[in-house]
Length: 312
Image (cartoon, rainbow, N blue to C red; front, side, top):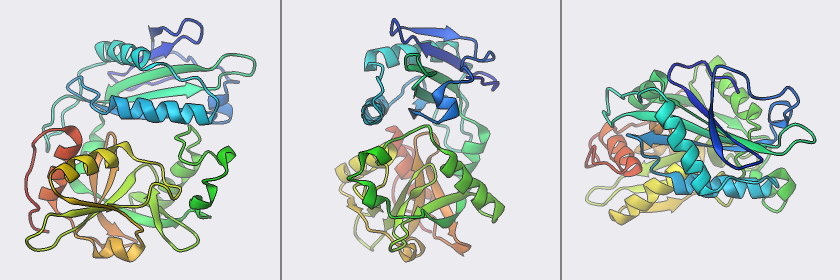
């Protein structure tokens, strides 16, 4: 596990004692036969930390534990993960500041569990680093996306546990290949569609949320159905919970390409990028709403940074 970013801290959770210990992130800690490296055999979660607060910690630990169970891996307890997180944040450099949103000090934290080398015990590690400027730029400027066929309908995987439906594994080669393909074709991100009916599934590393506005009515937020082979998003779920409490409408798909083009705004939501506006789909412009983006971001981080639905 080698990270050379300035301000990065790393903690290993011992497979023997279960206790976290701070390690030098500039030195390697993963063996050449570790199955996280050779097979992507492991699970992970990425957390956003704002002014030292991992405000979605419980949701992330619950999903990490569920992913670990699906892969027959042990998950560190919540108390152990919190101790590792506190240790890493104490050692990490100051969090970075988003000049546009001014939320506070931001860190990106990744908690991973590996099968380990053959014959060894599974183990876990955590890294913490300031959020990069590229993330702030995506929040500010938005991203264009291409729609990519997933190759099958993942809803068909739901009864096949060996295919790990809904599990956040370290096997991200397909997701990264989708991003490379998108960028090679002039876009910045990718959204997967089902082969059967071009139903919108999810972004390569995010959930898809769109807004529908009607005069005199609260906004309605819509996301694809999480039970249809889509990884349940912790950020999308938090936004929907708060929106519902504010009297907004929330719905779960289905969504198709035309729905994104007709929406009043579309976002890719994820833990560290927060709510990134989509500016185009397959080269076709999509409406954006900066004020509504700030409102959704506020819902997500639990801060009042914007009100109303604004103009497009």
